[in-house]
Image (cartoon, rainbow, N blue to C red; front, side, top):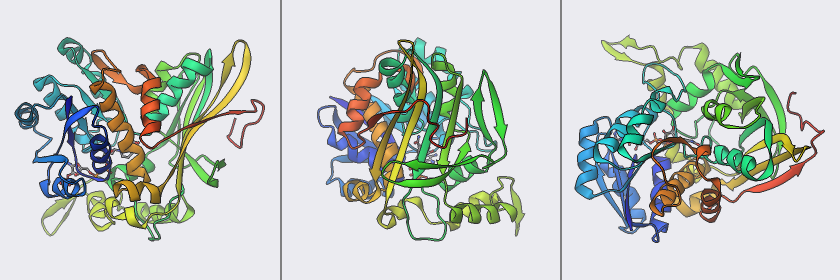
Length: 401
Ligand code: NDP
């Protein structure tokens, strides 16, 4: 039986805690540590004392390594913020235990989505004989595993991939982001980018739009964004010619965001007010609703999946693999809405893979480099079942060619 240590007590952390506590066959003890211990304690209260809690500053590797040793943790799941990725990787190396996260490292002052800082840890994790599993949320995470599954079972070569992320949940508020607002807004206000024929093609923020018909949801405006899994998938899929990522945003959401951007509220350049330096985006985050508070308000479904186009035994094939998740059901089970749920379930399942020895190996791994079969089984059993639909290879389903 393994001891898992969850770092971060936000919406995602709450789901990871609930799910790890449901995995009594894998985890003898489940721990959560975060900057604000009272948030961990509130989650522990929901779980009837199955969760043990601590306070930690995850920016300090020595402090985290000390905590790991003190409680005897075997696996660390980082669901704090991307800023903590490197210091938590350092802590895992110092204490000699596997590392899992759901989002790539970002330097606090430069909004970039790149794996280079974490890939630079490859030799250190190999030498230490332990794995670091990067990006085990839904996207990145499950979407990477849909790709690995398609490559393993459905195709000899995958030429085109479109990742489609739809959140059709409605919280009834004029404007709120459904996960950490700072990360969310940084993602949307950045230039779009996709990979085609070996090179990256940039688009202006929200320049490319398509109205895609999502199963069980309906037609939704979807915008081309850069998303971090494109970087690793463009390297790890056989025969790939193009990979793109689309996310839905309602017209209301885009209007609010446009105004906020136009008045400078999404900037991360510090300004001085009454002698205090503050980033406008940080201030905006403070005045927006806490994503965790959206749980009881949000109704509707998410649909996230991938459309693959390629060849099997010389024949052209097209498949759509996706999951549909219902906000209200997620909240009833874990007190978190579907965006946190779809991220937390895969993070807990990655920890399960390592605890049960279903994934082995040393080094830094993106998800698609690991076996998708036991992982997708676990993710299905713990709340995120997937559908595999064969599509007409000659139809473009309203996706620009
Ligand atoms: P929240 O902001 O709700 O929670 C983050 C938690 O981390 C908070 O409890 C916060 O503490 C804690 N934390 C922040 N800094 C530190 C620190 N230095 N030391 C200790 N704890 C710290 O975020 P979410 O739960 O919404 O998201 C968690 C992660 O999941 C993020 O990295 C996000 O990017 C990622 N994500 C990934 C997705 C995917 O599909 N791959 C989708 C959605 C999110 P405090 O309470 O004190 O502020």
